[in-house]
Amino acid sequence: DAGVTQSPTHLIKTRGQQVTLRCSPKSGHDTVSWYQQALGQGPQFIFQYYEEEERQRGNFPDRFSGHQFPNYSSELNVNALLLGDSALYLCASSFYRREAYEQYFGPGTRLTVT
Amino acid sequence: AQSVTQLGSHVSVSEGALVLLRCNYSSSVPPYLFWYVQYPNQGLQLLLKYTSAATLVKGINGFEAEFKKSETSFHLTKPSAHMSDAAEYFCAVSDLISSGSARQLTFGSGTQLTVLP
Image 1: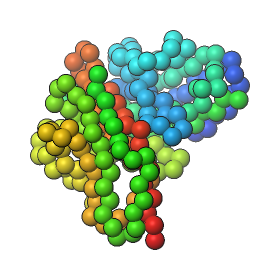
Image 2: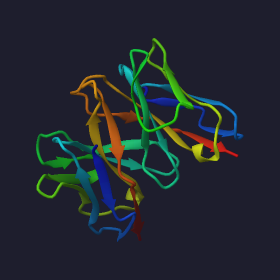
Image 3: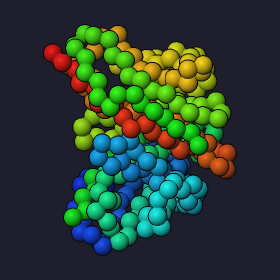
Image 4: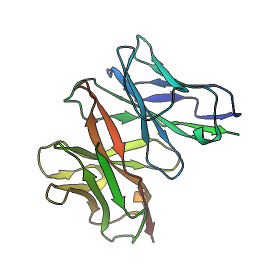
């Protein structure tokens, strides 16, 4: 049973550029959440996707956008990159129902903005 | 809004000693609480969870945590530390999305555990 997978593993971009990160959820899961983990900090919730719609959003600017595909995989897009966007981006998958407590995390994508 | 405070950003213990990592939460409703572990350059692995059943929760790798409502705490313990326990540990509280269905996690700032030989 494949767990949550993310690509690429590492990425280096220049300020002002755009980036797309990808996530495939754990088999059977229908919901994908994205988190940003800056160095030395805990992960912060960016947004969550279910049924190809953004269901909830954390305190992140509109430069951060996402998409979910019919196979439940997801993309995170960040436009106009800033140095402060350098972080580990984590994808987590789960079931979209209140009884489903657990989120399973992927290994993350390390984004460096220079 | 719910929040989590982890006391002590760095904890060092000797191999074989007791591990105690502290977590306090703030919640207006009965919370669901989690401990995750993160090894260098890896994602998060769930250690254990509290979902309103037994207040003493046992997890993987010999870890356990006790939910104490009166103290709003959910401290993580392990009787005997092993070198392989060296990692960063995160406490998290689960919020219900406003639609009432799926959840988002609010994390503490983490505690780096060092195990000394």
